[in-house]
Amino acid sequence: MPRVPIGLLFLVGLVAALGAIIACGGSATVEPAPRFTPGVAATEAPAAQTMAEATTAPMAEATMAPDTSMMADQAGTVTLATRNIRSGAGTPRFCTAGCSEHIYQLAITETLTGVEAGPGGVLDPQNTPLLAESWELSPDQKYMDFKLREGIMFHGDWGEMTAEDVAFSYNDANAFTTPESIHGQAGDFAPLIGNVEALDTYTARFNFTLFHQAMPLRYMGPFYQSAGITSKKVFDQHGEEGMREIYIGTGPFIFDEWKKSEIIRAHSVTDHWRKVPAVKEVVILDIPEAAARTAMLETGEAQMAGELPFKDIVRLQEAGGFDLQRDNGLAHERGVFFSGNYWETEHPISKAALTRPRVEKPWIGFVGDPESMERARKVRWAMSMAVDREALNDSLVEGLGEVCYLIQISINQPGWQDKWEIPFDPEGAKALLEEAGYPDGFQAELWVGPGGFTAEYGDAVAGLWLKHLNIETTVDRITYTKFRPTLVQRTNTQIYASAGDEGKTGFPVHWPKGFQGSALTDGGWGPGFEDPFYTTHLFKMNSETDPEKRLAMAEEYFDHVHHQMVQPCFVEVPFHVMYDTNQVAEWQMNPNMNGNFSGASNFETIVLK
Image (cartoon, rainbow, N blue to C red; front, side, top):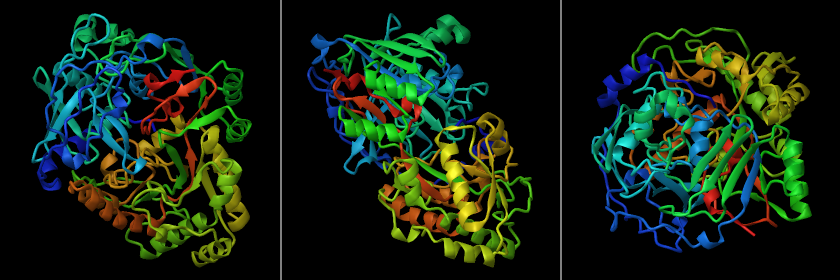
């Protein structure tokens, strides 16, 4: 979901309200990361523990030795056929959505922390040390100090990475410190991360305006919303404009070419500090047509292809020689937001009055009018009960997905409870609709966008509403670029086919819930509804440092979500790259919630046959 900076009012209010909102918590330690030695891949390092157990232990040796086990066999080109290669930029502030993820997913740059599957598998992501060998959270949760590895060199002649480079990379990207930044995470960093400062050569301090318990997994690593670390010296020498075309990092691959909607090309290093790739080159091609991506995979023009039609995935799997790379653990939770239910009347921090539309639609309830709230709730429940989730999975996803009931939680995740299931019950749905005063159905509007899977499943859902409830749905196919301002301005009252930022199955359930659906995001993207319960519960979960206790607290959140039914989920859609097993011998991918590159990452681990 594209993002914009959160409003200044929110930022000022957060800073002023920190003491009243966030409870204090202590710091603890984890085991230090081992020295990387020849022949031992970085993926063999043990995982760091949960955020509540922030790392502090120093490295036994500061300089890492690279894994050179594949150096002698380094050969060949890996080609991925994908879609939506975004504009590139070496200057963080100009590296927009897509670019900001492309650059570290391809490992041109690296992030402070890493990620790997935990004891619970890919749905249990765990932080690991990467550019930072350790980190420590202050007892008052106002800052976190990252101890950097020594001796990590930037590509070319740009010298050693230091804390000044870390501070520059985040401060230049963050809209809090650089208001003009259009970095992909500019608005995600802004309400949480303040100024980053270099305490000494190898210690970077992240000052928080609001500490989030998903730190650092969500915001400092490759798992979701991060910033790749680049060189401040490039900026100092070339300036913000001159740095646009200079892509400098510390990763296993060095930038060669980047053209929007066409190609990204990079070649491998031969002496990387942690992992020397087994291939010489990676080429990412933007191929808009799904049929063309499938053909490239079948003919051998590409070893990997993403976002293929599900019928093609099933056909290729049955034919043999092709498989899905499922290690990222990513599935998109496809459902709807019942927009127009703006129930918060004042900003949670500033207490400023909120002006929202009051539009009479069957699924919209009005605070202060209990009868209206209950009628609308019954309508939302009826519309959710009229959707045959199993049929959607079978017909649209070829059975490769999973049914789902509430956006933000999968039935396969820890914390799921069967009480949150929603039955497919057309007769019961009709009865609820009649109780709400709509025995003959009504007119509805559903935004789905101009094409792709969202439009496909949106059409199917609209068909089910018509068939079972006589709800005639106008399907809105305008582009997201044109639709998005209504979400930012809080004027949208159409039903919105989306899962937002947090509708991904790999997000831990113990992460604080409620940001998506709270008026805290006023000035930025919102799902089309605002519920004061979401705000209250977000602060409640975020004040708890113990993930197990937060997991228990999530039950109260999903009880409320289930009752109100403003964000039902219908089907989880797997988001995995398909690859040619006759050409690719090995590929170890870590959990990754980024949909860029069709969900592919960890190219440095690929070994060709």
